[in-house]
Image (cartoon, rainbow, N blue to C red):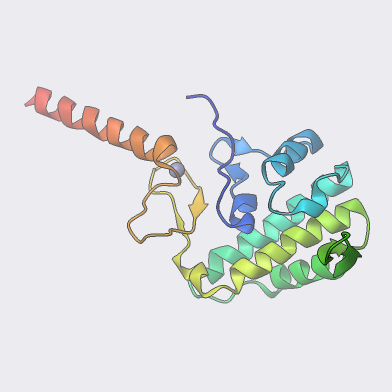
Length: 188
Ligand SMILES: [Zn+2]
């Protein structure tokens, strides 16, 4: 099976955690990070033009690590490591956001912007997304895909969702089970 890349379309913090999956690490290089940011561009417009450096990559991977560690506990209703929470708070504090006002000719607009280096801004947006997910009561419904070889996490919109995506894992597992059944019938 060709690598379909990381799943996107879950809450941003889950998409971030899901960039490391059974296929490997999809944020291994600055170019890979740029590709992922392009996929997510609509969700945090402020990063659209950010230059991605090694420092940015390191900052994003650190936020991912702390988000994943905190999420593993919080989604089970357990206390997360304080160190992970501290790191996510620190990342946000390094590039505080303001609602930047402008006049577009007819109305005032307010655009959320952050101050700081490109790496700090990127990390801060993602750490904020992590804070939103971790503090959302729905976080306890986050679950992992049921396919044995898939570790992708998702927030089910309906309680019966079992796969990260039917086209990735649902169909694959159904086909495998079908062949398994055929095989065991044939052996009798
Ligand atoms: Zn899956």
